Structures are given as C-alpha cells and as structure tokens.
Amino acid sequence: MEITNGIISLKQIDTQDYPGFSEVKLLYYRAFQPDERREAADLVAQMDNPAFKLLMIMLYDKPVGLVAIWQLSSFIFVEHMAVTEQFRNRKIGETVINMIATNQDQAVVLETPPATDAVSTSRLAFYQRSGFDIIDEEYQQPAYNPAKNAVKMLLMSNRPVMPDPIEDVINEIHKKVYKK
Image (cartoon, rainbow, N blue to C red; front, side, top):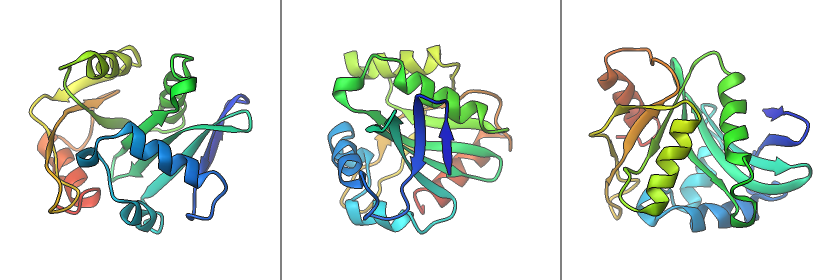
C-alpha cells in the first residue's frame, strides 16, 4: 500500500528489515506511553496480519513519522500516528489524516487521550480541527498484555460509523486489534 500527494507519502512497512523500520520503531517508543503501545515483537508480528498496515510517513524521501491502521469490517481504525519532533507543527499529521480519510470510502475511527494536560489537549484539538468528533467519552483502550494497564481514551470518528450501535464498533476494535 502506498498513498502519496507528491510531497508526503505513506509507505507500507512489510518486515522489520524494511529500510527505515528502526527509525519508525524508535519514534513509536518515544511517542507513546508503555500502556498505549505494543511490545516490539508484537508490533512486528502484526505485519503478517492482512488487516494491519504499518505505514512510514515520508516527507519527500525522508522518514518523518508513522501511522498504524486496521481495515475493519466497515471502517478504518487508526491505532497509532506520530510525527518526529523536528517535523511537528508543519501540517504533516493533518495531511496524513486527510490522505487516509480521502483514500477510503469508510469512516476513520481513532483513540486519543482525554484533554488532561497541554499535550492531550493539543492532540484532541488537532483531531477536532481535522473533522473528527467524539463518539464515545467512556472508552477504554484494553491492555495490550497482562503486564500493561487499560487506558482511558476518547473514541473519535470523522463520519458516522457503521455498524451501529457504537458498542458493535468497540467490540470489533477490541476483538480484532487488541484480541480481547
């Protein structure tokens, strides 16, 4: 899978030997708290799952971020998205979210922490500016493994999600993404 607008492109990482994977993995560990992310071996194992895509965000030919998405029954789930610190505030994240949304004929659903500090407030505002609305304020991201904790999150979408009710969407995310 590759999506491009001529300046920014999303290139699928197929294996841990893919050029740039080590930089993507480092960003993944820096950008997300331990309870909010998979262990490295679990991330690599997901690459064999046809529903999962780990995409490297490229600015021209330079890796500047990552986005992990899942093709679920009737929507795209963005599990993680991050841009390297030196390239933040350049509309790269906004461009990537718009590229994903416009290249899909389905709703895009994602999790983000509730606004409790400057960083989480900024993330929430970013997604709202990008056309996302909160669809569940009581959402819990399940623990990735028994050594980790569930995390309070907001579930957001850029358009109405099918199936409805929202519990069906949550159940599918939990079952297919988190294996719960």
